[in-house]
Image 1: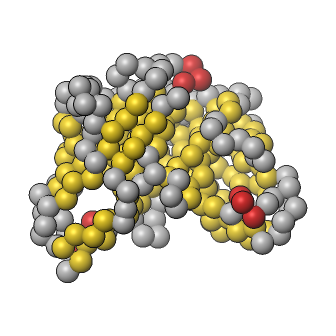
Image 2 (image 1 turned 135 degrees about the horizontal axis):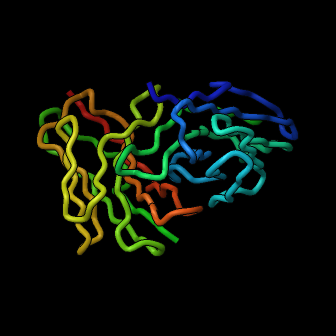
Length: 114
Length: 117
């Protein structure tokens, strides 16, 4: 069954802390995405990738790095976390044909930066 | 860039009443984007409610319907009779499928729906 798995599900860190959010998909999809979801803003795209080693900048990339190590794994890195990065983060994967299957989302990672 | 505007919430509807959540889009990079409605139930992740790939077509799922209207650039979500279990946040999204680095979804801000008994 197609799946996108995020870890951890919840994370608390302090200002200036170093955080890595992980995402793994088992769908053989080329595309993977990181979004943040905030009330009043909806989902906003941070970074995305269309293959191992590829990285594309999204709409709100400041303060975030990302790395796609394999077809399956996509990581979001916050090297100096700030309270403004407190949010719910969603990872998604997609193939290059939305007619075949719409992007699939993970269950989200809730991050609190104190 | 692309943008999606949807009904600002929160929206409160009584059970068995009808519902419409408006969604309009602006696509600058592609003439006919793919359109989606996603839903997030309390405590759960984001899941696809329905999608329409072709302009002029209608999508439906779980009693919800939405028609892709390219003239008015709209994709309104409707349901004739809502249930308490429909309480959730609904997101309208535009999919750019023009290839390469352009495959991505642009979301609206979400509409919180509460259905009261």
